Image (spheres, rainbow over the protein chains, first blue to last red):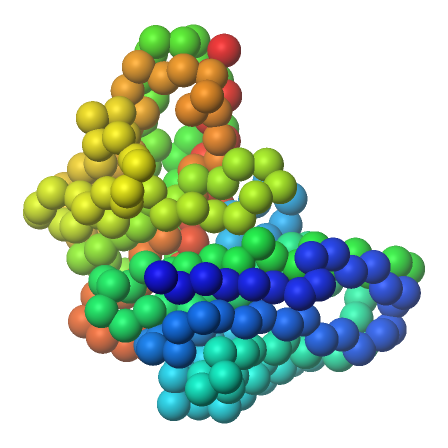
Length: 113
Length: 117
């Protein structure tokens, strides 16, 4: 059974810092891995999708890496801004499970002005 | 990215009544949609997989008679919470991925907050 752990659980930083959010998963048999952002009381916004054959993906100030063999993914946020404050969730998609995602508990990020 | 819309965004109902939540894929077709539930300060828990034209697949511990799922078209899935009780109060979120291959990226709705009095 796939289990996902995200570290740290919460993070508070001043504006402008570069951040690394960590995600580990127990079963490396994944189809892809997505990073999401969730604002309080809202749904999920897809940030980055990494296919199992890829090592990293970039979108603006965000960069996500994937090391499938070791069961790890990291989300790097450059030059953080107060608007980045949200909960960040990683979700690997296991093979042969019809597309369902398994979620970690998330990292709650607060960027102070 | 693709758009998934949920309705209503929030609903308050009395204990014992039934509530229907809709999930629509606005610009793509989805053979499969997923329903999640999220309690405060917790992560998303998959409730069921909704399959167009066939019965939903429920996760262990989820009562299929309580959470009725209907996926009548390639763009619409509905979740009906029957005989709702206060413990059913939660945030319900659906997701979908465009049919026919593609990247496999999943898109989520805005969520529906249910409060049962």
